[in-house]
Image 1 (cartoon, rainbow, N blue to C red):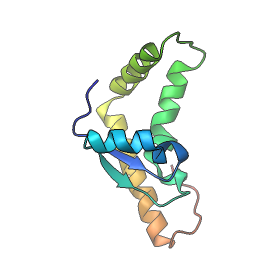
Image 2: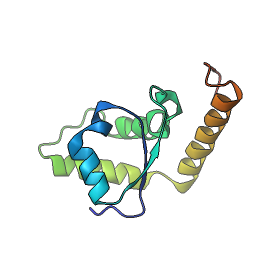
Image 3: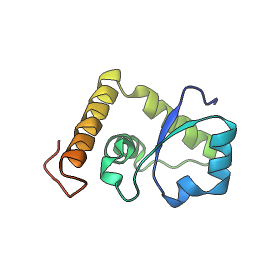
Image 4: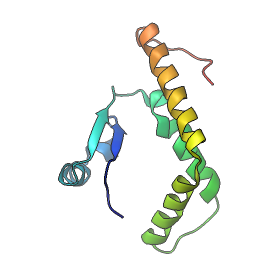
Length: 110
């Protein structure tokens, strides 16, 4: 799998800061969209993508990492353009609320 035209939304999670990860992303020239720490509620993968992957792969076992990677890729590619658009619109709405409330807690977003 090649990495091209990819932008990742990162925070300060341990996995995001690991040297092997940062070196790989730098070498592959992956653009990072940095995010303030401890705001996982604003990250699209936390409220959209991961739940889709979890729902599809729940209860399945993989004997090799490459088989898991293929299964995840199939789930990601199977999500409709409309679902991605809705997810990013929802993300934008959350970011706007975060700005509106000066970073304070808010709830009731759907």
